[in-house]
Image (tube, rainbow, N blue to C red; front, top):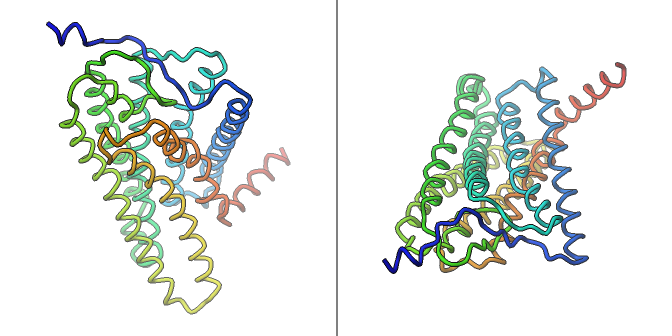
Length: 312
């Protein structure tokens, strides 16, 4: 009876948010909205260019278009709600909306982790085994890889979202975060979640450590192959591309691993918010710039598409 009285099965939560209602909060919100618009525009343009230019109908750009689509959906799942809560001053989020935000966020995060490793495998095959590329990495395989990323991400999200939403929440309904995220939700539960945290750790190994290891191994083999190329210009280009790709990958996986592979007791709200900004807001903006807009093929395709639009 005592446990039942002290358990609060809430219908609504309060998102404490990221920003304070002062001039600095408004400036920071403006910066976040600019990043949001750049991310939406950059990824949308990239998808359209890949779709319209037949020369970009290759496995690499097919996977890249899925990455851009995920980034658009992911940042749109978080920033508009955060901005509307700050502007309106109302910090409430319904139980259903919070559950949906968790569900979608886990799908996008999980799918992107797997997709990034698939993209690194594509580059590894293209550079290290170019003669076998049409066999090892064709359109059919790229479709299966993309579909597998979405499917596995959705299954994982369904399991974790179902569990988290069935937890009893006691006392405060305030989530000290700017969106509904699993580690922040666990802090509100009035039962021991250590067993479930073990499940989160297993998922993190599958979605974070293994893909991250595949990416590092793939780029390691790529750099090893590039070092045997006699052309210094080709080496510089490869090193520049690999270093920029790895920088974004580390910025995405690093905070993500640090957030989801620590016990609940080691989490602090301020730290979790800063880490979440990196993999939910900044990365979607940087991905189209790093992966494509520095790519000559994409830039040529973009000029071609813009030229056609201008003539029309």
